[in-house]
Image (cartoon, rainbow, N blue to C red):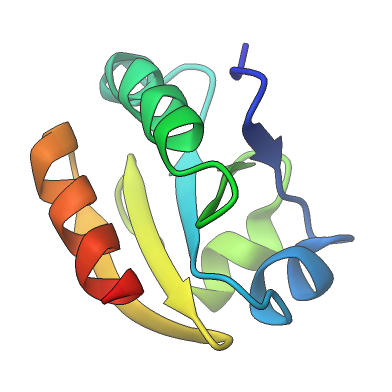
Amino acid sequence: MAGPNTREFTEDNFDDEVLQASEPVLVDFWAEWCMPCKALAPTIDELAGEYAGKVKVGKVDTDANQGLSAKFQISAIPTVILFKDGEVREKFIGLRSKRDLAASLDQLLG
């Protein structure tokens, strides 16, 4: 389960929570059956805690939100997409280190 600062994004709330957000947003596209996704989950939760109040962090279950997966061309999971001002700014496919993701977030916050 996601940490206290990690939100759940769905097809119903994605526009409001991500595309209309005033702050940068990190979105982790994942699935319950995906072992690399489970390995990435603690990193996502740590980032959510460390960037609370500066960056919105959340997850999209690709099985439950196939429309979002298609819209953002998710061909492999985990995929992490960084949004700012409603636009995709960076896309990471596969497992990434916390340092890589944090460096990109710091750059977005610049």
